[in-house]
Image (tube, rainbow, N blue to C red; front, side, top):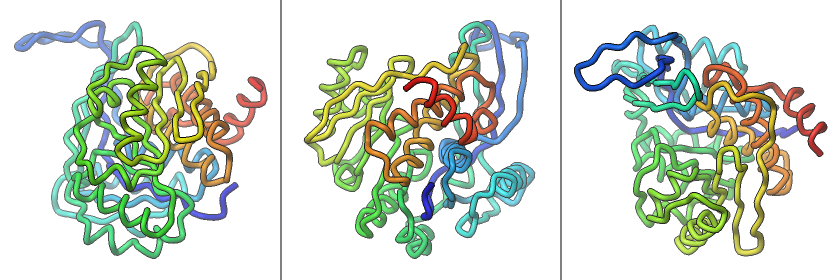
Length: 309
């Protein structure tokens, strides 16, 4: 396992998850099936996934001085995540409303990032020493875009491999791509970035090619139940998904993949093996409810991989 940190810079929001048989129309009240409250946010979920998968993890973010922020701090204490650069503000901690289809487990999510959106490039710069010691730097798009780009540029300049999980999907400035050693969009995010609809391996490859021309080192298009497609100047390969059992809930699957992928890269695994590791983490996570609580521990991931080789 890696002796260095995986540093994750990203969001924390509290998840409010509602399981329902249908989405209500505007003005309609509908009785749901289940409600859960728990820790979430893409950055936080990925930090938990990486920690449980075997890495020493440091998390860069910002929380409010409120009960939701206290929930996050307790989570990181329990999970053993380093919080020396987890800052505080008087603004409220963010939240996400997650609407889950009671039959399929598919989800729709509304995020209000709150306190973490106040994290500034100047505050990230204070973590330069930590980032320089990291084996991998992982970021997403639930922070201010200027802060995300600054963090990636700083890590890249220090020779630290960078991963950008471009979620939630949005258009990105051309200047950000050359700082991304790895870019990990799902199908919808790849379409937002490139304008190419991704519903097949061929279309995923076309989208990956478009992103490579912008300066990305390696593109990994995640394809849900179809696994992932990896493309760079020397490699093009489809990596199948790893089935860990019946799918209960897909919320957090992308976070599980990215956290696991970062851990495997930090350990020096080859790219295809690192993707398989990420697929195994994601495969287990979707068999469980919740986001952070669904992330598997290392022994579970190793056992699943051993069965599927």
